[in-house]
Image (cartoon, rainbow, N blue to C red; front, side, top):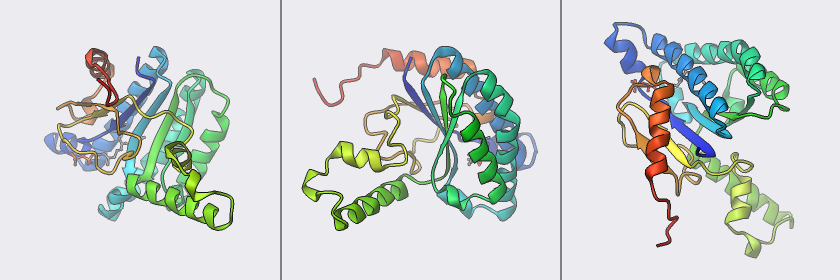
Length: 230
Ligand code: FPP
């Protein structure tokens, strides 16, 4: 099993359009896929699962859609809490969490606190996340430390930099899954995905289930990972 799986959940809008439904119906069904996939990871012993739930660029969508997504997120976190506790799943979040509406932030913090001691999979929600801005923030923080004398710039190396990222305490993803056939990173975990194996499936995210994740893991297991060596 990969230790850490990251997922770019794409295709909710297309799933809804194909059915003549509003886009939010696709996101609602997408939330059900998050539940299924999280449960599978806990069952299989995957240690970390990071899902790209909302990018900083997603704020450019119509207000009605971003508002509905935030409400969905808040409800999802509240409704999932018993299931997270039952399956020993620890909830965490990365991104510009201060951008989220207060209700959403409060629900998130409460779930993070209540699940902190859980020992199965860590589910990391990337919310108002941007890989570039995360790298930029790390650079800013290191510059401030250097200015105040806490950091010797000469001693800066990849490990010190990595720890400054919002993902600093997690291992890099081993496997990245992207649904709906798009071949892009879309500003997701730009530093962390350097040596990650990529699996792209045509399936739209709301149709993605346990079998699809298993197929991605099987394909991953056939890959030879050399990390630049021979
Ligand atoms: C991409 O599909 C999906 C998103 C921008 C949001 C992802 C959100 C969810 C899966 C549901 C809520 C999340 C959680 C964790 C409960 P798209 O809208 O870009 O689809 P399209 O490319 O077909 O239009």
